[in-house]
Length: 336
Image (cartoon, rainbow, N blue to C red; front, side, top):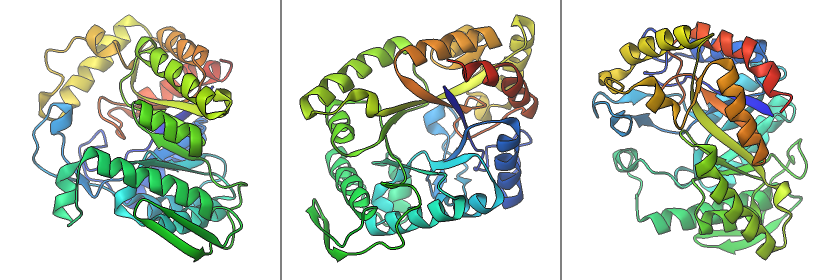
């Protein structure tokens, strides 16, 4: 199993509570590579509030733009794979997505993965003049984008009309370094329509940030059934799961680290939540506990787990915990 790292790139993302800067993001990515993580990921929001995670909707938290940030990180790293988890397709025309992805793929020497999603955060859509629309409309946009980007990664020219996307003689050269193109990973919990899109057009499927193997298993069964209907070998769909993560050397150390996380969590959102409850659908426990859970996901065909080292996505509340994870969990996870 590969282990990825959700890079801290928001104003809430760092242990000291200070805002994101380029040097901090760069240091985090290079640190992930040095510690041995297989991949490093950024998300795609103009800004974010933390109401979804139990805190106040104010203040708004800033973020780095993912594609330009990843282009910079591509030139500053050597081994670690880089990707979006996930890019919001309504924000950019598929041709722009394809061209930017191709450029990052070249800059990184073929180390880029393109994660795509439909978008969910209505507040940022409206703030920047983007129509939020219905869930169905956003999903149709995702379906069209996945097909168009995949086509533009090929030799071309491309003639394609799907949804609102119309390509007539579209041409994307130079071609990406990776052939037949950077892997396209679609993010979502796994309803039938999403899984059918993945079976037909995508390379991988990702779910985040809280998930148990027991809840994941029926989704895998649905994916395999739909792949059968579509004539695709389900083992060719790369499965990845992102998980909020807290690890301690032993039970005493875990309790201490979780207490520190509760104090760090904005708005006291974890106050009153015992570690046992938090651990139910996250990657939380001793190294042995974490490896046991990773093993159960591996049995369900998960090839990569992306850790977010806090109770928020794309955040780190204690750098020493990441060091512990890299030392005590990561090497054994590779054997799963």
